[in-house]
Image 1: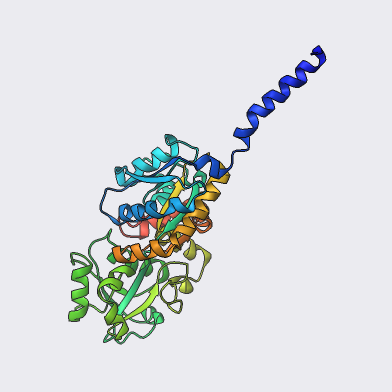
Image 2: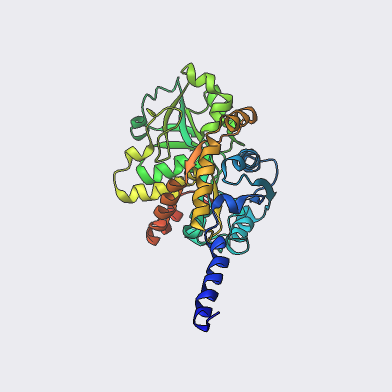
Length: 343
């Protein structure tokens, strides 16, 4: 062989050897692979149950049909799992994970020893939309959301850091609502009993609480949903207004968004930073397809677990909005919402 051909031949051989890896498709990568879903919560809760339902269905929607398993990694309010996904998990698409819907806002504030920068995760999507609503008794005489700005409305609370107390107190301080908070109830069940007995006129809490135990009272008009506190449409009834409608300034909207947008993350799922974008895209599509799969929907219904789909793009927008909140606005929020309200 002429010596002049040797370099070209070597280059060709090297190119041939490198091409398969470089051109490996998503399906080829995932064939015979195992994907691990890290759940930052202990076994038995809705994050765990939802993650296991997802694991049973998402594999068939991923090119290459990998097997999917769940690993619980509880600790420090899911910060342990968050930091693992950020710094230690493989970045090849074989590991994804879920952590608390509060992680993004806590990272912005700089609390809880969170090492991760949520902006750099590969957001895959979220399941569930645990929206919060304010309801009143049909006997209260309160007809519309505007009434909370016109007269005192007595609502039940269960401590400064509880959902029952955070919403009415925040709306009083941020928008000038006239909720009168009666503290001392042990939780949502006691608060509902107080509402039924006429001790209070209303209650603000996660919509699922009313949906699972008091849906008939809503249908019969014994309970009325005044508004919800998320910026998205209310999934069960788009005619229910958002409290954002009553925010008069952009600063008020920023404060509401920082305080209440955590529920819009649902149960979020991410890939570690640096995961190849084509694999993140495939996981996003598989996640969306799985949550629309009739088999998953049926299993979720039988398990009483909300698996409403939250697009990755919407979660990314929420993260961007949180990081765009001025520091002085966050500091002001910390002073005017109940203790624990930003956690």
